[in-house]
Image (cartoon, rainbow, N blue to C red; front, side):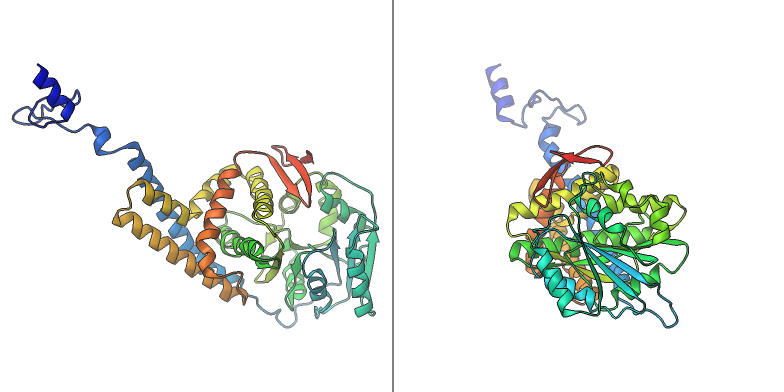
Length: 417
């Protein structure tokens, strides 16, 4: 009996008993390995994650073909454009603010153009930048609105409400301060909104790091992860995005959706404006145009907090869609799958395929935009940070926006934290 117990403990296949399991499927009793030793839970999870990585690689390949649609195209002859008012809400200074705003003044727009800059604080250093623009372009129709009135929790929308009474033209563009507009951008937006069935047009945007390596990583996330997802959503009909950095809509449409006041307490004001426009039976579109979104994160903490504001905004808008977007993080998934399955040839091949797919997508985005958002050797680090931000999104409902902290409710409304 002691010998039998010893053979069971040692795992000897000469004894019919092995860790409490008996094999009756052979011509004579023989010991078998336990199922937990053949296939562990970690193995199963690893293969599932490898499968998700493969799906993500397929998505990345599809996105590589689709982003080419957003290469800038000129406005065709005979496409009339309406007189336009551009609203530029400002708050403080940021790297290259003067140069970014100057791109707006250098647009060769084909109709009368009014530009309104809006601030809440009479001591805001951005005022000096606006005054410099006024001096540089004395013939331009530039207005500066300084109004401390706070209207709702969303500071940007509050600023827009304060500016709205000065709108003079039938076409309205809302453009963030950290946006640089390539030549022809306003003409392209105006042409897109000429169709009476189009209610709102927004822009594919490419990141540019203006404040060191962390800002470059921020720019790469915009260009090489977020914008490809926009291209896929538009092409497949899974979404009709309204992208906040720069949007255009007719004044009559803005009034029909209730003006800016309707969106003064929501975090995702761009999304809610797009949804309100579609509720009128109109479409939201992203024309072939790539503007530049300028990033200014100087530390890793600032970068993560900034990106968490975006991801928690998206999670609040579409929880199922955001959860499903986890599959798009093909490289981190492939690395995790390889680690969990012991790094076999299949898992390592998935890692190599993910690297190749991500590199190819980034090169394609650069070609469509006509510029690079960052060095490709940083892609693995960028993808790992993106996956960390994705996972962290699920563990909180607070965001930081220009130094202020907010708590996001389930309906997308925000309140000071």
